[in-house]
Each structure stands twice: as C-alpha cells, then as structure tokens.
Length: 350
Image (cartoon, rainbow, N blue to C red):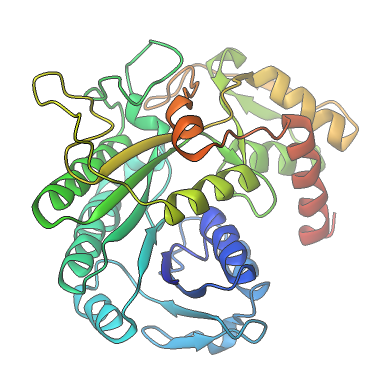
C-alpha cells in the first residue's frame, strides 16, 4: 500500500514508518517537528530512517537516503492548503494519523496548541480523506479519554464523557469526528487508545525518560500521587504490531449494531475504537524498581501529590483487539526498560 503516516518524527510514528517500510509499503512521513520537547531526539529518529536534518525544508518532500520507498515532508496539519496538495498529488491508499500535540500537563498551560493540532489538524485530515478518496484511516486516541471513570479494566464499551484534561477532550473529539465522517462519507476509521507507550526513542516528557535521565545524572525524581499510581505500560513494538494489524484490517460497519442499545466502540458505520495496552497494570514504584535494576543503582525519590489532569490508574481491556485481530501486547516491563536504558546510554553517550 501507499501509506501516509503523520507524526513520523515522533515516538510511535518513527517506529511504525520503519516497520512498514521494511515490509515493502510505500510510505510518506509527515511531521511539523515542533519544539514541544528536545528536537535532537526528533531529528535522531528521522536520521535513522535516512532523512537528514540539513535537507529538510517546509513543504518539500525529501527522499530517504536509506530506503527507496520512504519519503518525508515537514508540514503542519493546520496547513490545509499544503495538506490538500499532498493528498491530491500522492493518492494514498491509507492514512495513519499519529501527529498530535501530546502531553496531559502541558495542556494546562498551552490549550490553544491542542485545538490547533488535535482538532483543526484532524479535521483537515478527515476532509483530505473525504475529498481525495482515502477510505482507510487509523488514528491515535488515548487512554486519557477514560477520565474520571474508575471502573477497571477500562473497556471501549465504557462511557468516556468525563475527561479531565484538554488533551483527553481533544482525543475524545477525534473519535466523535471520525464517527461522523464514517457515517456520512463511508470512510473506514479506527481509533487506537494507547496506554502509556514506552521503549527506545521514547518521548523525553514521559516518566521512563525523565527517571532514567535523572538517575544517570545523580538527581532525585518526583514521584506523583506518592507513588500510588498504576499504569498499563505498553512496549513500542507491541503498539506497532497492533497498528499494522489495524491498517491491514480497516473497520467495517456492524449490521447487528443497534441505536437502541448503542455500543460506543462500534457502529452501523465503518467505525471502530480499540484499546492497545498490556492488559497488565504495573505499580509506579515497581516500574521505578525496574529502572533501578537496569541502571544498577537506587534512585532518590521525592513523593508528590497527584497532579491536575492525571488519573491514578490505567488498565486496558483488550478483548476486542484479541477477538478481531488475534493479537495482545505481551512484552514484559523489565525487558522493555532494559532496551530503553541501553538505547538511552548509546544515544546520549552516558
């Protein structure tokens, strides 16, 4: 297939592009390369795919020096005119939209960034799919949509009308927007609620990166909610495998779906939402212990209260993913952390 992946300077997008290029798909990567976090990591991800920083120019497609079937363009999703031109010229078979303004805490100080990238940008993706005949769209949602829900494990059949951050609200909005376009225009859309993704090339604003950096620099770490957090940490390779299966098996309308007893994760339209999580929540203090084991020393800790916008626990019910895709993430946390720490030491030479 010819696939557009947005967010390919990002964590998940860079891994997905590598996987699809390796299996022979023609891939166009897109990213705005914003400065939300250390751009060295973003350019490093691109460079390992043969996209060198010095040849990147806004709006210009760049050919990978390593892969004949991979090109990249620096572009903002809010730039509707340029996005339409890209769709018109390239004629994609499928789109996987992973580009977004990420981060729960950042949304408390910079709400406009989430409206621009996650709402306006996603609308532009939907409109481009509509007008340029792309009927296979997968996109990143988030476990944060579960908000105030305390019923564990989180199921896609649960109500998600009580988000507690603008980031979460923007992701729920994406799901609603996608359903509308599935219903009105027949675009097959699949939303993926990711659960705390980690691994090599991970985001510098995430706990694993922050904790590892602090530990190797001899600094203490801030542990929120006094360490009483549960997270369904999911290794990057498991996430990518789930996305690939979704791209290869786009959503279908369910004839048995009933508006009298509506399942929010499916529809009579070709629309679906999946959880992608490890289905095995880990205590934050146990996660930190695994980092200490990988690094070989204890990390000093400062216990902090729960931060605004954070939820105390995440736990994914992945029944639908298992039934529909015959797949369930399974990488052990210690194995994943060991691989991340090895990558971190190599990339930052520490």
